[in-house]
Length: 425
Ligand code: UD1
Image (tube, rainbow, N blue to C red; front, side, top):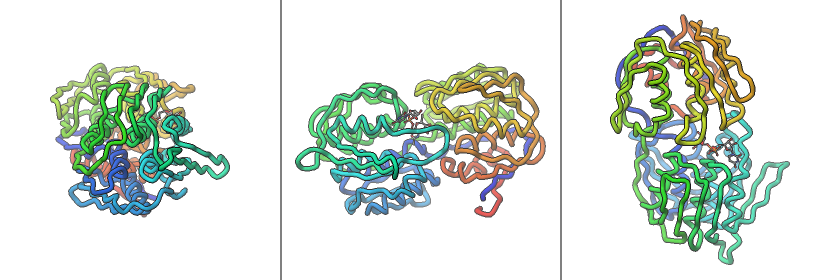
């Protein structure tokens, strides 16, 4: 079991250029399946989820490499399979975004209900409902968890559709976009997720020859069936990793500068940090934060972009635990408060009631042994450890490696005292 050891109590100071975005790269890797040639993605983070996606692509017959400079090459000319193994699907939820591309390219696909972090039920009904609109015939076997999809067109093709998503699911939007790009004719998608990663995917597909209009809005018009070709695309900096480090600095105090991100994508966080008393300066591609006085009580509600990201809710809970407290309402994933219990072991006073968590007052935390329950919850415990008195050990830190390339390297650069230990590292 991998662990992270943290010696808390110091402030954070320094500059950091952030890793490439996990949530942008994974759908870009799926998009490469639509191209019968070579696709190059730059600024790819070397994280577990990316490695897992590479394994799946290789299993399907693609050739996929990632070099030390974060340059990934995917040759999908040799794609031969259309089925993803159950054990691979269970390793990561994002594997479900291969459903649309496989269906489009092979005329059929077979997957299993996906796994990933245990932060809620995470069904895929919206993905399946959207794909059915394009003419996919989908069968689900609830006992085995197997989902098979086949295109109903004569030659295994999909047809353009009008799709209204009842909730702006990021993954369902991405699968609908993949299907629409491949389908014959025009498609109109509404109720789409507006996350920057969805926009980045659409821009990439347009560079591959697709015609998507309305990028960045909830309504997309897509002319499908056009021939696609390869492209070289660079992933944006990871706004969630950047946000985690800004929150860590607000919690530990100090002065940091994060570069390599689109600062506008973090507006919901930066305005909240300013409300709490942090001093921030923003430029288009960098954010400076200084925290030299106690952070005030804040209230926040998570929601689809541009609202506050659910992925930063756990790190924020850690900040609130050591500052003026506050109220958090989680509207996206129903089981995202598991970290509260671990924070309380360190001396925090988080009370969870349904989808709300309240921290009446900030406390001084004491280092102890805690356990990461999911990716972002793990990052939250590292944040808490940086502020705590003494030594904190975060168990099951392999969850953190699913999304952060090297959280110890990054926070050490900012002056944090932490390192990997345990049997796996
Ligand atoms: C993506 C992000 C994840 C982030 C989440 C919400 C990637 C790789 N992951 O995940 O980091 O936390 O967006 O911003 O981009 N839902 C359904 N039925 C469905 C699909 C979703 O009910 O078919 C529900 C989910 O249970 C959840 C909500 O919709 O309550 C949001 O999920 P969704 O936007 O789909 O998240 P992901 O794409 O899985």
